[in-house]
Every structure is written in structure tokens, then in C-alpha cells.
Length: 281
Image 1 (cartoon, one colour):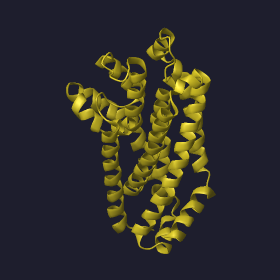
Image 2 (cartoon, one colour):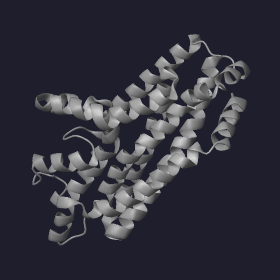
Image 3 (tube, rainbow, N blue to C red):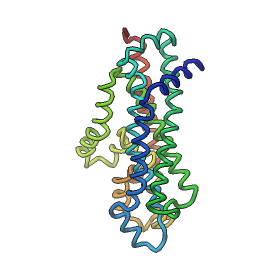
Image 4 (cartoon, helix red, strand yellow):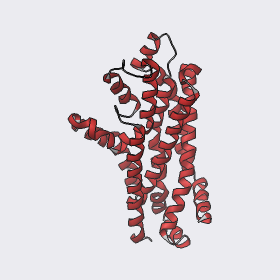
């Protein structure tokens, strides 16, 4: 297994894909961290309050929820890319059984997911520092909680991509499907479920993935504004913040994590079952 994992890292760093997708993560995270601190009603609220607010924590959530698509695409090409390049036959022959190959990819891409997560959190924090200053991060514990959630979200999206890529084994289909679902299809589904969105929507894949960070960052921000009880904050405030920064009203972060892990496991198991019997040339 150790040799298989080393081989996967060699494949990753031999081609330019890993940094080609990492660059937009860094740029997008910094931009969201900077510009998000003055976005709409959040910026107005910041101006109206006489105390500093942890607006930079919200932008870490927003940047994460934008950037995870790059981690998912990177993970999807772990297997689908080898099918496109016709190198999957050699991989399976030298790494038999096929389950061991998938396991090695999961280990290697977990490490890459950590790298993507660190770049995202650091760049988003630097952007937030430029936009809101040191006071925009609250206390160090809050920053660690939101940053840790962002790191976890990036790793899980990477692993979901690996499983999905193994399932479809077509790089173009994997890329189009992930982009279309994350930015189009689930939005349409959520719109159709307006009446029951509060009970169904948080359990959809993208909503659950976004909630990993959003359901940590938004309550921290509300507590800074309304106090520990959060009684003074109406539901509408939560819903507006969740709309922009991810998560769902009264939906705990651990529920989002559990739900999304379920999707990750389903795709990995599906990819493993299909790859066991798939013909390769």
C-alpha cells in the first residue's frame, strides 16, 4: 500500500493539474475574503455597530463554498483522468487488486485535499485581514473552528470527487456533471422545494457541503451581534446570512458533516463496485 500511495503522489506531481486548479482556489479565496467583508447588508451592519464584528469569518465560509468545486474536480480526475489518458490499465496491472488502487488514491488525495484546504483558509484569511483588519476574526478559537471546518469541507469534497470520478470513469462527463449539479441543478431543485426547503434542502449534497462551514460561521457571527442567547436575532437575519455564506437555519454543523460524509461514502463505494468489473484497454 505504501508503494501505491507513493506512486499516486508521483502521478499527481508529474502533471500540472494539481497547481492549475490550486491557483484559482488561492485567487478566489483571497478575493472572496477581501470583498466579502463589505458585501451588502453585512457591510452596512459593520458600519452601524460600534463594536468590531467577525465578518472575516463569514467570508472564509463563502470562499470555501466557492472553492470546493476545484477540489472536487481535481479528485474526480484521479480515476477518470487515467481512463482518458489510457494509463488505467497499467495502474490496475501494477496495483492489483483494484480496490487497493482506489484506497491508495483516497489516501493521496486526502493529503491533497488538506493542501487545498490550507491554501483556501490562509488566502481567505489574508483577504479578510485586508478587508476587515484583525478585529474581523473574533477570537482565535472562532477562527480555528471556522478554518478547521473549511479544511474538512475541502478534504471531503476532494474525496467525493475521487469516488464520483471512479464511478463515471469519463473525465468530461465528471467535470460537466459536477459543475452542472453544484451551480445549476441543485439550485433548481431547491427552488422547487420552497415550501419544504427547511426540512429537505439542508440534506441535499451541495447544501450539506456548504453547511459544514456556514453552520459554524453564521452562528458565531450572530452571537457577536446579538449576544450569547441570540434571542434578539430574528430568523430572517439567519436566513439572509445563510443564503450568502452557506448553511441552513437551525441546522447544526455536525448534521451537515454527517450528511455529506454519507454522500462521500456512497460515491466511493459505488466507484469501487463499478471499477471492480469495468473493462479497461
